[in-house]
View 1 (tube, rainbow, N blue to C red):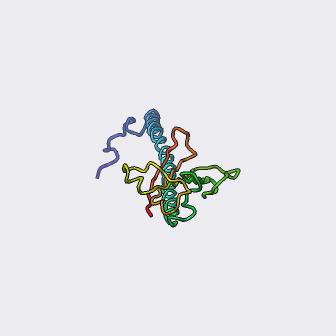
View 2: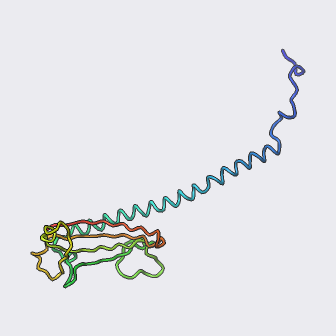
View 3: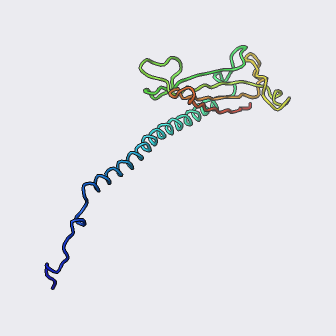
Length: 175
């Protein structure tokens, strides 16, 4: 059986970490953490933008589903008088988390602005040159209106002007 005298003596250099080695390890760890921190803030920003894009997509689908569910010749789908387009604008409120038409209540702000534009055409306009170029005014008889073009545009009002993406969708509805 070996005695304690037979074991080799412990050297001072192998006894553990020195203070300098600990400081160097802490400095390296600090550099790694400082390099990773911006990734977390960027990920949070991307999550917010992703949420905004999801809301925009859902809003576009909701707006089109509401308009396309209406009968072709219903009042909300009819261009008024001598004008050639019907424009309706509503806003999504940030704090209230709902769509409103008209003035924004004080204490809240507009996050999204949704604009729906409806134009009506006769099928002959499409047959002439393959393009819809001459919208019919609202005072035409319903029998002359064969096509309605619905444009929906969403704008994020919280972003700066140069970053403000516009989401546009167009649907053509035939009678």
